Length: 446
Image: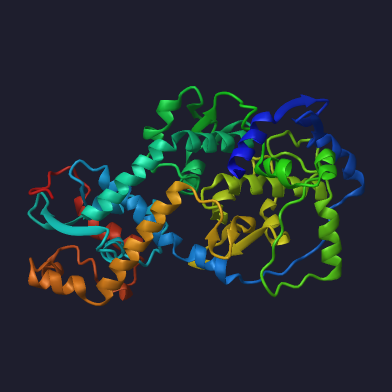
């Protein structure tokens, strides 16, 4: 019922530019979300120097904690499944480890062998007759990956619109492919979206060469129906009518239990919420970056960006290079610290992940994209394999069968060598696999 009403609201929202303002009509009502109001506030609303403390949120940390291994495993599954033999030598996989985000001191082969319910190992001979570890997928993983591909196909319009809206947030409607690659997991895009998605939607996207010679993706046309932020959609249903008319939309706020706000901070936050809201899809060039109005626009940009992700979170480093494309001021990511009631910064996995608080009820994502369920099933499969391996189940099976576990020490790769030999995992991979970067055929392919 709610989804139906939201759909009706979205359908009757219309936009037009008028005297520098962004207007929205809803059931005959007209109200402004524009830059002009923000400009009028600038002279009396400077940037208030308020510092709010960071408080650990165990529930949201738990949401983030298993993300790194899950993402790396799913990328490997995609790579292996696209191989002609559905089985890939370790040195081929190691060439792409930069995409996986794994720690440098963790060997790729070690990581893959942790999850025998997803990956299965065999061996082939290279051109010189040396045994080479190869990794394929278990039947269960292959079946689940096929379900994932089916869901991507069924939700292709949704995924394409997420990418279109991302480009609409930018000043030039263009982003480097490298930047999109960093966000593709969060947006739900397939790993090979360059080939499987973009070419089929040439009326929306065009591959271009940027001024710095990098490859980029350009949006071919603007769509007014997409240029409505999630906060504006929610406002039509939830906000106070006077606030909607004035364009002073407030962000949903929630703090970690035990978070204590000082009176000065509470008063500032109350007044900050009453400031005009500038749509992230509108031109904000008139706004002075030294004001709270401008800061509210920056918060709105990232609020919308996180809503475009299927799990309402992304690593902080993924947005660090979006300053120029999004026309943001220096040190723009400071809004994450200044607004802990809107964003939570998790420090799990040796990185910082920005989570949209309103999207979660403790550890539960409130609105679940179909791809989220697939990822959770992959995660469950990985945990099962890790547990069984820790109990020696696969070691006993290997010893009773082909003896792969016993013979592994005879491989030239010595994948499990002691990490104390003075080189990082990435360097070790390079040394171990450098002899196999040729095009020599591998005998007895898996």
